[in-house]
Image (cartoon, rainbow, N blue to C red; front, side, top):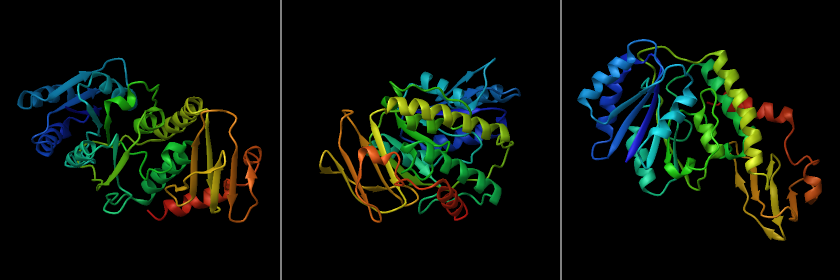
Length: 314
């Protein structure tokens, strides 16, 4: 079964259209739609009316609680499916994409993330301010959390994963970016990104605000501490300069590219006493003890310049 978790706050005008489109997209698939509702208007009544026509619809109405991330987490706890998806109620995430996400999961993915930023994707004509805010949020997240660096659209609210991904995860979300939390603390191997076209909102109001931005930054700060603790035997090597080779205990390891094209290596260490050597194009061979104080990593000014270049390319 696929459980589609939809957090709602005063989204009554979108509910029937959303459910109708999800039902059409998931024909032939065993699914449920679980609304976790914090609304202060008639949205709960509308959901219950729609549920009469669509038996797959369930609702958890919360009182005394609020926040998108905690609503989604509550939905994950109540979900019955082997696969779990999260999407917004405002139809900016086109429901038809769920079908292709499900196919990716059936093909062996642990995590499927639709992206606006890969070939075939589209941001729906966001204005320059929304592009700047969204792009900056992505880049800050990718700098602070290594697990986000090879994912093009890690701050999206649309994603699907296997239940096992979060079975043992320490999820303590705040704010809006629940996928960042799951990517950082979950257990998974194979992530597939598929393109999708972001849609313009037709009903209701956007929830984006300065408070949302501050909650996201607070979330990243807290999450980085928990991520580092959970991954305390990992060494990250990330360089703007070309990495020629990395040796771990005298064996070469694979060098990958992050989302902005920089050489990137993440080494999982089973023992603290591990020999590491790094050779970049314009520098001498660096030993393990030199890596922390070396210039293998790019400077803050270079990072800012790189972020701005990437943001305004979108």
